[in-house]
Length: 92
Image (cartoon, rainbow, N blue to C red; front, side, top):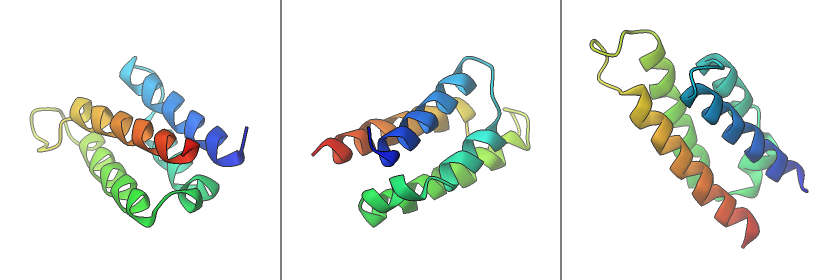
């Protein structure tokens, strides 16, 4: 398994942990941002989208669900879509 694929698996596991009520936004964000092999293996647009989603997820973590315009659940759903599409890029 390549380093990029391992990094993608780590990001996916962090998303799943957050969905299950465990883990932290900070851990997910830090690990995703540090996934240089993964981001280098994907088209540049993937990095831009990931960073945008992470920025919004970090913002949502600062506020209660009612006071933030970003739904953490929706952002995690979008991050999962990103992971699925990134996985497709890595295998093609």
